[in-house]
Image (tube, rainbow, N blue to C red; front, side):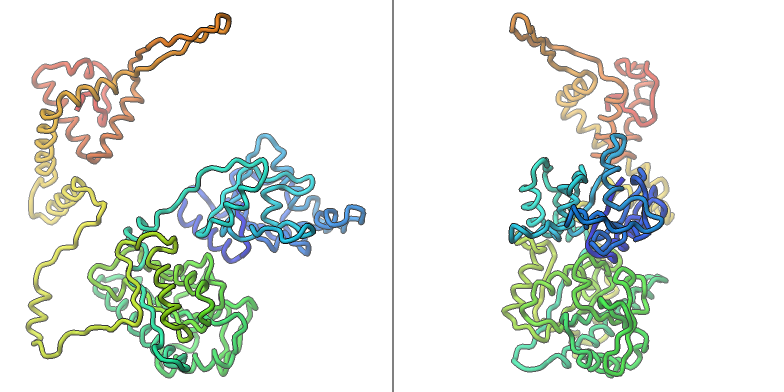
Length: 556
């Protein structure tokens, strides 16, 4: 069983939704949100329990009695709620103590709660108590930390006793960028002169929101897609904002875009209640619900969405934060660069970009942000295809050129370049399938495979000796047997040779099939087997065994 732990209930809820969406084996009953009424003697195997820091604080009903005992062992314990027999710490301890159960702890945003103690009397954080144990409760056996900034987590774990650490699993940011899951272009707008430009850039941000909305609508009509992307704009405000200033910004937005519905604005403030900004009353929405709540076109936020937030349709941001908050800006932009359709839009730079307007920044501060975004935040070389543009100039068609020229240009045939990692064999078979489906070339698949069979025949002849050696290495397992004489103190090595079993040969065939594609491996092995049967060759004993239709008994 797993405890999925974070310091933000909304982040837990979003993770729970993503797990349910991504897995075909997890059900809603397997994903348990631990509430104050939760009680079990031990956690149930096969389930994921979502727990947050607030649920383990001293005021929580889940820990009633346990925390007071640790603070003052001589004090009488606080009474348990009438229906509670175990605290959450009792439940964790019973789970760990049961030898038939294995408990995992997943720390989401694992850098949090890992600060070093500043004084001898300072209490350890709740996260560290879960890892190291506390009092009679042992530490959770297996801990898995997830973070974009792992340095603090690594440092904390390295100082812990009784812990063995495994190498980090690092997600290569360059591969993620190359996959098309992230926007290619980040546009940063900053004023070049000193002065109050917040209203001007709010107007500009609204124009960008209107423009990107129209572009997505046109793309949806072009693709005949019912699920048109409805982008939103984020207004990022300081932690102690002036509500009247936010009201003025909303007035500017509605003046610039009169068709924007009155109920298209929401906020994610910690108050969790409707807020009044000038003449506008704005409802609260949970951060994890913003992406699916397409009625939200303008979102007012502090820093609740700078960590763990997932909303790919956030395409424009206007930040009222001062220049010293560059970390908050960079974190939030890292959340906004995800592509709404999880892929690039070919030939449309506008839909592959995200806009950020920074009224209170100067170009020097923005340049630092741009450097971090260009490298994905890890300080290494620039990401492939990623551009960060500061105050770019948009170039539009020359009105002096006749319309006929543009029409002729659009009529020219074009071809989308293949992805960098697209395999030629797969591309050829896909093309053959499309030609056959459209009735342009009958039996295109057979023709494509026949051509590739000729290539493989040529390679078999060219590398005959290497293939024979590789075939022998698959059909037989060679090794050495160590014999130790404990009485005489001597050792000897004896060679052994064993014939490979079906599973070993099948595994070698699958690995070869992945290299040239499973379909080509199947058709080629079947062709080789048919040729041997026609010629009367026994195939070196291979055909005397039961054959699997995808097995390489022919040695091909």
